Length: 242
Ligand code: CDP
Image (cartoon, rainbow, N blue to C red):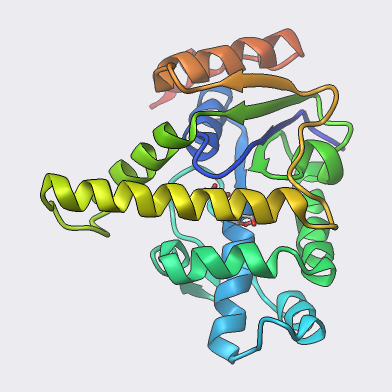
């Protein structure tokens, strides 16, 4: 049985993860972070010492990977049985994920897994190609965008919250913001121009610019659309159960 599928796509740091997690929570759907799967595939390649250009080995390593995602937003990402939640968010793995994800064999292996999860349950899946390639028939497609400067600020805040950066002075913040903006732009460029499944808005996706929106507003907008497409708002039921 295929459940209801909500696809949330968009460029780096556009608010996909935060939005998708909270929407999944409200609807009591399974949340799938497809980016975490590319990140785990990149980490596995790194551990095995596979060269970036060895596409065959990258595809084989991805096929052989056991990647387990948490069903809700929180919880560990497991790669071959061990918790890699923190390691897949490092700058090194982030950059490598964007390279590894250009390899068709890597994508094929992960898309197969994404489809089998999506077909088994109601889900909110976020990524770059969910509404275009993975689930072209998704019940609702959202394409999130935001200003580059705002996205760099969000990334800085997120990394500080996760304890990945110290509390440095203004000068250091300015430098980091410039660095993040460059990194985000480079990844967007690579994600949008690759041949296999480039980042692009599906013709029937609804674009939502999150630059001036609060998280609550973003989530509310998507939940409202999901309800219009037949999802039930289980937020209240959940609150009663908990
Ligand atoms: O959260 P952030 O936008 O920084 O990245 P992510 O969603 O975790 O994705 C990491 C990388 O995986 C991206 O830069 C993409 O290159 C790749 N990716 C992809 O190609 N297709 C997807 N469906 C999801 C991620």
